[in-house]
Length: 343
Ligand code: AMP
Ligand code: MG
Image: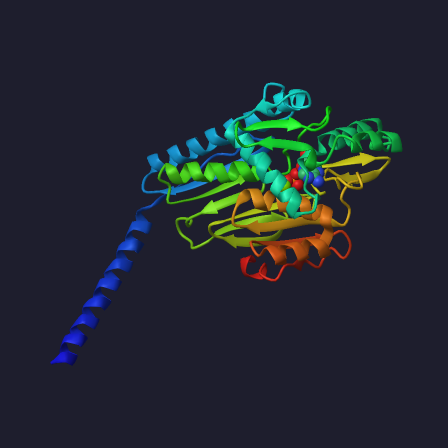
């Protein structure tokens, strides 16, 4: 008698399970996927895909995500004299400047990643970036004197943040913050939050190769993204494909943006300590749980190089790294958990 009852319960559970799975599958089949046309934001080409119950929700979630990116861009673009970051760069050397909580958050995160990377990531590189840009325009290398002058006004330890009133102050005058190494990752995270809030079941945000994704694409279990090969000029040459879900990815290297001085190519990423451009790697791809981390680490690991970079990600355990070394560039160097993302 007992065993009959047990068999009945077992059969009933199995039926419920099958029905639930069918329901989930049915719901998923009913989802729609909307892809935005390419848009120019943060000085790059972007695209957002939204998966939702209906077209209206998907489209609305794309719009709110873009509005968030535009808002953050307005806050953090140091080349826009009207941005809050420009206000900070003009004034924080003299007095405390109160900032929007998102700007405060990205500065706090930047300092966190500076400490974690032993100063390889440092948003105070603004004056160094400007010096190298000017030198490239004049086709001359920076002088010892110019580099010594810049040295005095860089260093993340010279940023003073006060969480009581969300204010920023510089320890020395003349400092200039440059959020180019982390802003896209941060914006992708915030845009993703907006999409989730607007009811999207899944989505992919691509800000010029800075990727954040959540949920699933309509007809697949993972989002498949292509990583560019730094040694192929044609923009569609893919180095590898990654299969991601609820993850972020960033690639940094010297292949897209660089300076040329006297025929030599210099990366747009600088070692804040030596004040020269990062040379050891051609590109680094980071896969993380969030965009800010992937962006900051991809920039930092260009400076740190393969050995120190791998040591760091293995110790952290929250990110994976894939390097294209500057020499022997046909062999990829991967952290221990990177392989499972390669498609
Ligand atoms: P990404 O493409 O994310 O690697 O960012 C590169 C940009 O970050 C550069 O164009 C600079 O604006 C800025 N940058 C350069 N070197 C550094 C560094 N060591 N730490 C933080 N930001 C940097
Ligand atoms: Mg970066």
